Length: 347
Ligand code: ADP
Ligand code: ZN
Image (cartoon, rainbow, N blue to C red; front, side):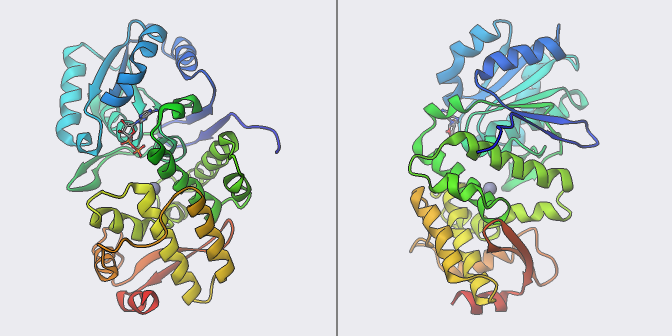
């Protein structure tokens, strides 16, 4: 492969966000803070699992840092927890000169980013993603948020000053969480970067190019369309169905498992519309299976329910819903369909 790219920049009206893939993440964090926030205090926000494993390493890299730990799991991504974190920061005397570091998966980078964006009208934020999903998706692109019934109903655009990606964190990540991240990498291969396919189907996939190409794809889309008015929509490939399936499984399926099935359904539609060859759809399914991801709607969920749910989705535009299709590896197309059209195609 070509030269490795270590750093990427997303430009936005809120300032630039620098995403760097580097070994020795804590050392990088130390160096970054020394260079850009000398004298500032540091609040590390993490969850029980991540802090449980990395507490001593945080302390040895940043002996003066305050560590705030929330319960692991999506249930902590709420206004209540965000408010409690703000109260903790206030009580500990944090000011706008200080820095918030989010150390964890997407749940933590969304929550800590949200807290950083509202505490005292915004304090500097650094993301240290520890799941594959957060490294290649959630922590990149400036979206923060907490849930209110549905996911991410309350949130802000608040790009992290720096996103420090150290793949060594993935050594302790449970296998199922690793697979969920792979589903997003497969998404990038399918709609944005055909060259990722080779990395993903390798017998012993090398994570480095997968991280780099996935981040590059997301960065490129965000630089063209930060606030999802146009191109950023393509990142929803597999997600319109995926979100419905994730919800209808009562979150028994992970995000990645649900979007894996969602991508297969989107391929079915593309084939019915004559926009995708069966061979291409099969190639994508093979990639998903290779990474242990499901490709069929589980028996306990009815397809009709999925379709009904899709049309209740917040992204509804009149009667039609937008779907992203993959025409060939790395190529996308946006189409709009009514519920009847969709029902006929998926029968
Ligand atoms: P996502 O990144 O998929 O949004 P979460 O933030 O909910 O997911 O993280 C998924 C699970 O993995 C959580 O239980 C979290 O505590 C745990 N976790 C995150 N990073 C690591 C890691 N590097 N090692 C072990 N467990 C981790
Ligand atoms: Zn996703």
